[in-house]
Amino acid sequence: MGFLDKAKEVLSENAEKVEAAIDKAGDVIDEKTQGKFKETVDKVQDAAKSAVDKGQEALKNVTDKGHDAAETVADKVDPQT
Image (tube, rainbow, N blue to C red; front, top):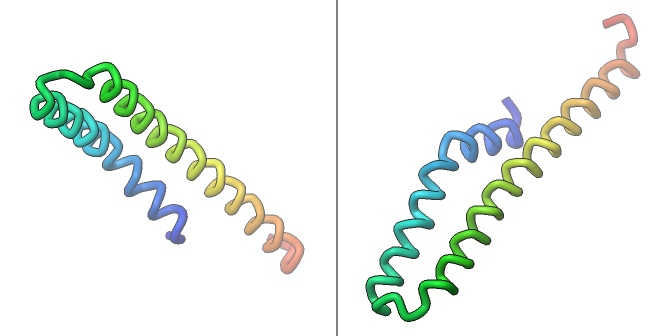
């Protein structure tokens, strides 16, 4: 398993934990500020969750392209397989 495969696996296994941490951080901020910045905190939470989702998708695309490139190189090196 390559580095990108491992990174994709770790991110996918922990995405829910990351999103839960984002929610908890927002809740703590809301509590400490008595909700004074709730709308802003909610927007930041949404942006952070979106970044996690985009990161997962980008990592999947990079991993897939990496596998495709490796197969292309392997075919050129040993066209018999």
